[in-house]
Image 1: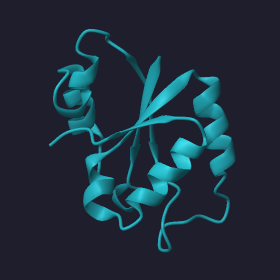
Image 2 (image 1 turned 90 degrees about the vertical axis):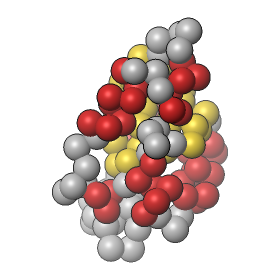
Image 3 (image 1 turned 90 degrees about the horizontal axis):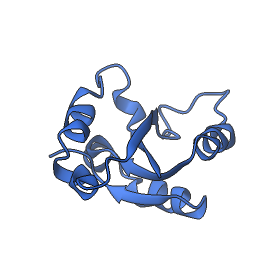
Amino acid sequence: MAIAIMSCRKLVNKCTGTKCFKTYHKNKDAFSIYRDKQEMLLSFFYCIGCNETVYKDEDWKYKIKQLKNSGIDTIHIAKCIEVECDDYDKHQSILEKEGFNVVKGTHK
């Protein structure tokens, strides 16, 4: 099993991902479920966007294909999406329909 973190595109110019990665490496908060397994973190990517952040050349299907081809089966929806996004449930639903296990959150 491999995991990925989906972060909020609104914060692409602010977020470095370091808090998510640090929490993953310390098996804390939402990543404590892997304490005995040491699952591999293979991807950090941004959501499909909202009205102000969608790009013309966005290829969500390609992203999903790449995640699946990499063996990722679980995606953590980062804390920033919970805080910044009105479409959290939409993102979760899309990922689950694509067959991913979805975990709410990364760090506190």
